[in-house]
Length: 316
Image 1 (tube, helix red, strand yellow):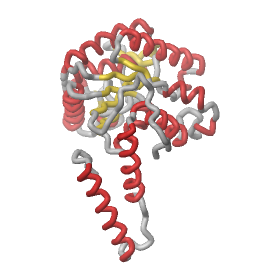
Image 2 (cartoon, rainbow, N blue to C red):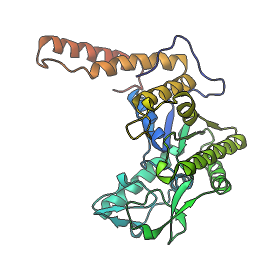
Image 3 (tube, rainbow, N blue to C red):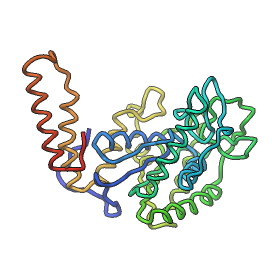
Image 4 (cartoon, rainbow, N blue to C red):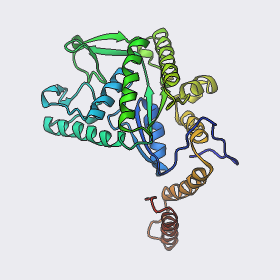
């Protein structure tokens, strides 16, 4: 669902996102939630191709690997509870067959490698400064995959450490794609399992990290999803039952802010046309075989064809 508005309300600093834009979203749950909405409205958006990743250094490592197309080797895979996984990638890329897991991960790297060379926007959502360092490599992992705790050390990264990695990474990405706009966000999901004080300190560091990167590079900006969740939606009715994750109402609210910030008037009007068709496609008929429903489908197909004819790049 898109919020109603009667006039354009794009922030002066925002670079509009259009349906011709290529958008890549990496990181925490915000990337997935907003990315799915962009996909539903037929934007060229790829959301979390490596699965959810929370730590700045884990995100930086995976982006650097994709940028250089640094394939993983089969020996780097680990076996956990019947699944072959890699510590730098989410378990969604794992597989019961090691060869298949290896192939899936490298195909994802190839896909993102190509995307980084042509993407207009890269959204990076940071989740926490607290991570788990693999003892054998002394590197922060993206996922522990329920491997034995003895293989990891819990650690809290410093602001300076993360900046020193992300700053040159961004420069490297622009070397390959000078038109890339990088947008940073901080996930509003609280990592309570690390402790309330620890989570607050972690989020504060992430916000400061984003501030430093924005002030260092003109093509880096910040989208305040965390602040809108914490300051505007200050009530547990905007959370799931776990009191940690934003619920659908909260996500819709932040999605509305996203729309107002990044979409032009023309994009906004097209979204309303697409939403009308999306709603019609979700219609559940009382009798699928009835003449009335067949007429409804015929009219819907005509509306889709008319919209695709008007916008040649639009595909339902």
